[in-house]
Each structure stands twice: as structure tokens, then as C-alpha cells.
Length: 367
Length: 262
Image (cartoon, rainbow over all chains, first blue to last red; front, top):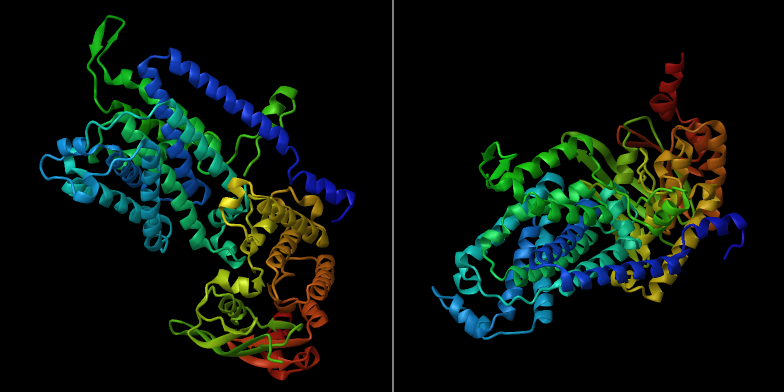
């Protein structure tokens, strides 16, 4: 094209540039992570492995939730519904006919489900697809409204799904829930899904589609006037997020092996909201950091719910639910003093990371 | 040949107020027409109806694309894809994104790759992205914003932001460009630059341009034809010289100004 020197400089800053170096560094980092996880699977105890699994599931959930709430700027409150849909549909797929017969003691399972039994991988995908199909159907009515109304409508949808799960005795076994789900989930599955989610969403956000989503967040009027179909893009972000949330739900079901509608109340959404707000709405890096901190932190905070003996002088009785109080306080404090969250809208970049070592701090790339 | 854009009896009522009353406009391919009138005359309302932001109370808008297309009832993004792009009176950039990203965002509507193409890293998408960067930088070079490609759009000077808005509209490859007060808040030198830029892009992109402007030097120097609105009613149409000497226009618009100046 043009060989003007100014032009070439401007272009270099933008196009592929150090793409190869970044790819290699990313692969090395993923390799190190896999190594660490392998060591953990050999030497860590069951409790620690469980935390690591939960960390990965929360990373998956937070990153996909941030795609719709942070990147696209559509404040919605329904991930608990998608997690529930994924968890139930995947669990019903992997349970053997005999297990189903034992679970459905009040009413027998509907015939078209009673004899289905598929391996774990197709079950995960079915879990994700179920959530995605619901998201697509739900997107048509809900994206007619914006802002607070969107939040309320999606919150309602989340409750509807839970109530339906509670009452469809022949499909979900109602409030009894499903017990004895095979524990297929291990570190490979959860971290594999987390990495896949990150890969897909980061690539999407860094592409032209990501720019369109951010344009909708920043100024929907301008975006539409420039030929961006905001409805379709919101629907895309929503459905994609639901797909990964559904798969995370499938992982969750096969990790804790017992699911009931009580597991998928608004509290789940609330936890995710804390994570993405603390990490920074619109920063995927922030979501990852906050997901790790939150999951690990809430395990550490179990201490506050147990009776504590303070230096042998007196004993504080354990207060159940104290963890949530502390999280709420942290969230309030973050909103008061740290409005942008840990990362704001900045993202991790190798450029910035290498800059730390060369002494030249260039600042993370804002996207 | 049929006119590029034709409106018939275009009317916009807000409750009891008729903001635009029976507006008839016919734009020939390649024209540069000015839409003037005092504040509150309904000029921006006309733009909002043409771009689908407002749905007219009555009337029709026909654009000559591949065939005649009725624009009333279409969404803004659809109208943009049919070839009408606009700038805004109160600048509507994405202030936190870079100058280049602002232009590339406007390219997105023409993107052919589906969303999974960038995820899978398909070469077809990479080619499109490269073309997008090249094209956007070239457009920025035209309005002397190339050096600022990495700057945050919100950090630009006012005149630069206005030029960026024009470039962003151009990135959608329009046939008809609607400029809403492009020279507002510019000093005489910037205005002169802007007139040069508009003349150039009009020729190079074979654009038809409809411009709202209050700067009379700008309007008289640039437009081939003028339409004057007052309280939603078209009070005059014609060549700039005719408008300059039109009694009705002088009372409605220039006259008011003269009196205010006394």
C-alpha cells in the first residue's frame, strides 16, 4: 500500500507486530500452568484440588459474565439460570437409567430422558448448548430494554428458571435435586474449560467484533449510526457467555455430584457480580484475578464462620453467613475507594509484562 | 435519472409541536446542499429522520440504492448500510478508545467474516483486519490525524474531533454524507481547512453531501443549493445568491441576527 514512513510506523504499532513473540510467551505460560496443575494433582490433598477446581470454574463464569456485563456494557443478572440449565442438562445426560430410577422416587422421570446416558464430553457440550439456546430465545425479548430494566428482566428470568427447576418433578426431580452424579470433573476438565473460555473470549474481544461490542457500551447511538447492529451483537455476546456458563455448570454438577435448585439462587449471580466488579468491569484480566482471589479468599474466610478462640481468653461462636457479610463490606469499600476495580478496563499484555523486567514501565494496554 | 434521495411530506410532531412540517427534499447524485435556519428550526430533526433515529409522524423517504428503498421504519444501522452516514452536532465519538479504533469501529458494519473467524484465526479475517487498519490509517492521513492514531479520541482538540467524526462516517463507505454543523466551534483557519477537506472527499469518494451549518461564509462558499427551514417550515430554496437576497429569509434568520447585532 503506502510506503510513507509515518504510515508504516503508525501501522506497525497496530498490526501483527510481535504476534509471534506473544504466542510463544503465551504457550510457555500455559505450559507452566499445566505443569503446576500436574504437580498439584500428584501431591496436593483433596481439599486443595477442590479449591483449584472451583477457581477454574469461577474463572470460566466470571470471564463469560464480564463479556456481557463489562465488555458489552449490558448489565444483566441471570448467570445462575444458565449455570443451572447447564448443570441439570449435563447431569441428566450422564446419569445412568438405573441412577435416574433411584433418584426420581416421587414421580418417575419422563420417558425421553429416562433411558439417555452419554459420556461426559458430549454431556458438557449439551449443557452449554442448552444454556445458549435459552439465551438466544431469551435475548429477543430482553434486549428490547436497556439499563435498569434489563437488569430487572434478566433477574426475573433467573428466578423463573430456578422455580421451574423446583417444580418440574418429572424432569429435574424438583426440590429433591439429583444425587449421585458421577464425579467426572477433575483438574484437566475444569482448567481446560477455563483456558478454552479465555482463548475464545480474548480473541473475540481483541477482534473487530470486540471493538463493536465496546462501541455499543460506550455510545450505542454512535455505534448504530455507524452501521453496527447493536441488537445482534448483544445477542452474540449473551449467547456466547451463556454457552460457557452452561458448560461451567456441567463441570460444577459433576464436581459436587449433588445438585438441587437451592444451589442456583441469586447468590451465585451475586458472587459473580462481586468478582467482575472487583476485578474491573470490562477487564478480562481483572475477572481472572478476582475469581482466584474470591474463591481462595472465601475458603480462607471459612475461619470466621467457625468458633474462634482468641488467644485463649474467650471464644467467639461461629456465625454462619459471616463470609457474605465480609464480602459485602469488601464490595462496598471497593465501590467507595476503588471504583474501577483491580484492573479498571486495562488488560494484561506481554508488552507490559516484559516492560517490568526491562525497567521501562509502559503501562498495560487499555482496551 | 431518479434523485438519490427524495422525501415527500416529511413531518415530525412531538405532542402538539410540529418540529418539521411537510419537508420535501430532492437530492441529485453528487450535489452539495446546505440546510440552514435559525436554532430550533428542525434541521437536526430532519437528519434524525433521514438516519432512522426518529420515526417520522408521516411522509416518506426514498433512497436510490440498487433500486428505490423506503427508509421510514428502518433501523439506523440498516440505513447506514444502505449508504447514508452522518456526523453529530454534539460530538459522539468513543472518547476512551483510540482515534484509530474509532475509525475501525465504523468499518465493522462492512465486515464479512463471521464472529468465529477471528476466534479461529482464519486467514480471511486477518486479511480483512489488515485492510481495515490500512484503510483507516489512510483515511486518518487525509484529515491530518495520522500522527494521533494512538491517542485517545477524547483527548483531541475540538476541531480534530470534528474531523475524526467525518472520517469515521467515511469509513462506512457512504453515498450520502450528512454533516451536522461540522464547523461549529472552529476558528477561521480550521474552517478553511475543513472546507478544503470536504471539497476533496466529495470529489474522491463521489459523495452527495447535505450539510447543516450556521457559519454563513462556510455555507455560501461551499454549497451549491440551499434550503432554509424556520419553525419546521421550508421558507426558501435556491442558489446561495438567491437565498442571500430573499426577504423572508432575511426576516426569519439573517434579519434576526442583524437586529441582534445592533
